[in-house]
Amino acid sequence: MDNLLRLPSVTQAMRARDILRSYGINSKLQRIPAGRGHTSCSYGLLINNNISRAVEILRKNNIKVLGRAL
Image 1 (cartoon, rainbow, N blue to C red):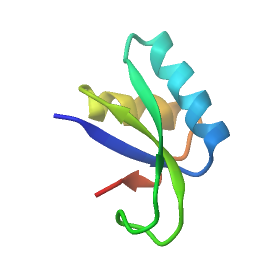
Image 2: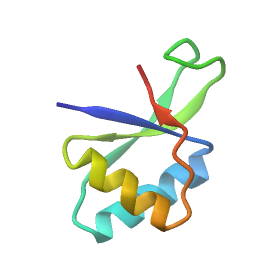
Image 3: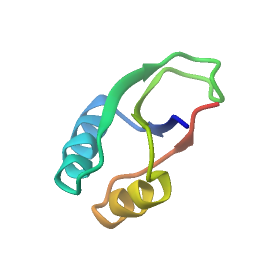
Image 4: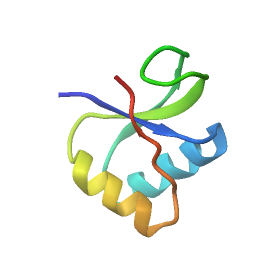
């Protein structure tokens, strides 16, 4: 099941992607249009598995995860 995590900026999303890659978790950068569970455009990472582990890794690396896009 695919999961889309919302991040505060494209820079943070790119940094998060690189951090997760170093842990063996593949992800894809994606722009999230307004209306998908939030009021403005944001960026996110599409993660196919290990979503809980990915969130934990990102938080330990000071990446703010805004939540999941609906």
